[in-house]
Structure formats: structure tokens, C-alpha cells
Image (cartoon, rainbow, N blue to C red; front, side, top):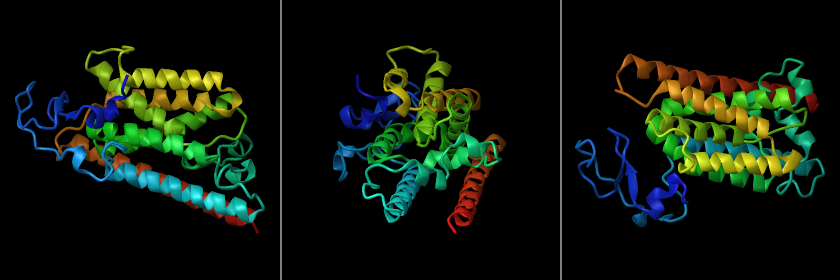
Length: 281
């Protein structure tokens, strides 16, 4: 079964901005709610047609931050004597850059619940997580709007690594808690539409396969973070609803909440930098 986020590639469809039903890219009027919709450029005319779905600005910034942090950690690890750092990072480097590490969390370094979500343990790790973000991120931002997507991303990351801290003592990093949070948001959208948790849903199947893979994959996969992120994303999205009128008080509150999440994330990176400076003297 094709993942829903790839519909623009395999079957040129998009989501109606009024009723959220899937329509074709050629439709000028939604056949379900009969509202006018703006034309959308066909993916066949883009340079990367057939390889990646449409990526919105916020998700692109998140991806760039992930890759930027990975480059910084790999260079630091290489300078510390690890020749294969770009392929596989050592745990000490990850801890130095803000990984979830229960001993330091217990010392009050709560900011690691945020920074851990932007770190990755190797090139395969970051590649797989960024593919997940590419596939699901545009769907969530189109369905819920940029502000809700950022809040879901932030809260899923924190909830995922908090669940990991409660469940597992090992060092943990990765954007997969947020990926599962975005999956949870799309599952919540299906539930709100009355579709339930149908196994026919690509989102439910994707979450189920990855959780099963996490169980079978052993100790290298942090399923606690996945479950925590999934639950947080589902819960927030279910009660948040989809984007409404741009100038409404409710949308203004979501924009404020998204900026709070951005500022907290920036503060956590500042805390990481200050900790790094003190501990690398």
C-alpha cells in the first residue's frame, strides 16, 4: 500500500483546503463540498518529481537544523579521533551535544529532552528519520497548519524522550519521536473524520510496522520514545482540530504557542552550548 504522503507522486491528488477531502490536482471546484480551489502545480514539472513530496518552509528548516547538528557532531567526533564519525557517532559525542542521558537528566538538565530530538547516531539513522519527516511533515502542515504542526513536533519530541527516560536508561537520540508524533496527528485526523483506527489507513500501518520493527530490532531502537511521541501527537492533534480562519483568536493562540515552542527550543540549544563549553575546557 502506498503511503498517503506520496499520493502527489503516484496518483496526482491533493487535499481540499475546505473539506479536507482528497481531490485531483486538476480540480478547480471540489466535487465534495463544491468550493472553488486554487490550481496546484503538477509535481511532474518539478526538478525532483517522483523523488520527494512537497516540503513546506517549516519542515525544511527543521531538516536543515537536523543536518547542521549532525555535521557539527560528526566533525567534533572526528577531531576527537573517531575516523568513522560521519558513518557512526560515538555515545560520548552525543551526550556532549545534548543526548537524552538519564544520569544528567536527574541532575536537572531537562533541556536534553529537546536537544536529543535533533541529534542522530549515524548516517543511516538521520537519513531514515529525515525521509520520515519528508513523507509526513507536508501532510501534517497542510492538514493542521504551520503553528499546530510546530507545537505537535515540539511536544512529541519532549514526550517521547520523557517516556524514554522513564523506560530505558540508555543514551537516546533522534527525530523519530517527532516523526511518530506527526503520524499520531494524522491518525487523529482520521479518527475525527470517523474513520477510526482502520488498518487500511496508511498512517496506522506505518506506525504499526515501525513499532513492530522496534520490538524485533532489539536494544538499538527506542520504542519508548516512539510510543511517547505517537501518544502526544495523537492527543494534541485530536483536541486541537484543523486550521481555521487566519484572523481568529484561536489561530492567534496557536501562533503564540508555536513561537513559545521555538523560543524554548532555542533556549535549550543555548543551555547545551553553555554546558558544552564548560565540559570541554
